[in-house]
Image (cartoon, rainbow, N blue to C red; front, top):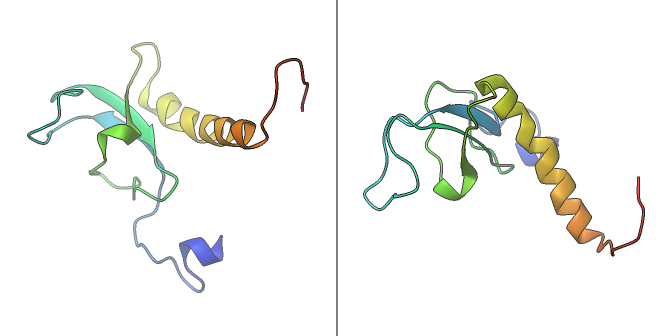
Length: 99
């Protein structure tokens, strides 16, 4: 991970990939979200999400289900993202089992 994040010190001062919060502003062409929406997301290339405010692309943003809080929402995507990615890379077929 040092090659990705920085060899001797982090390349980015603000780290983070998982985030959850409330939309406070949207771009002119954004129709999927509006100000006040509760959202969460994950960006494994680093979205500098350990900050008070973050700018994210709408493809990395999901509506937050009403039944979970921000902590649960932010913690839920990283594992799911990697599981989904590697299951598809492994080309698992119907009927096969894996651990």
